[in-house]
Image 1 (cartoon, rainbow, N blue to C red):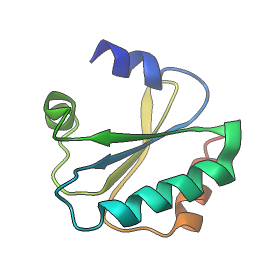
Image 2 (image 1 turned 180 degrees about the vertical axis):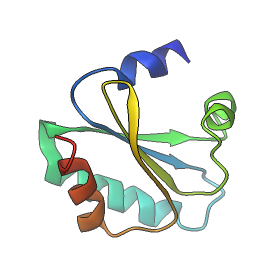
Image 3 (image 1 turned 60 degrees about the vertical axis):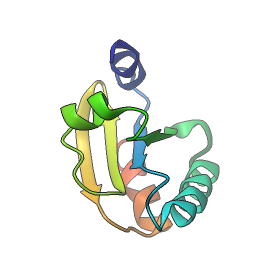
Length: 98
């Protein structure tokens, strides 16, 4: 998890999408995150994290439902939501932290 700490400590917002391949909506979420990343460009980092491959991180962050979206800035969680969200709403949440 030290890599995770390094990832979230900068002044650039980091949007995390916690997902699993077992989830029915993982394809939709992949398209959503691609659109969000394209819209934000280099203003933010957009990262997908598979909870099946990162169970310790998912447990530490208490990820209970998929998808879960979290925004970090300066190493602090500034926003979190589980469940579906529109791309424009997600972009707005990230832009509020730029």
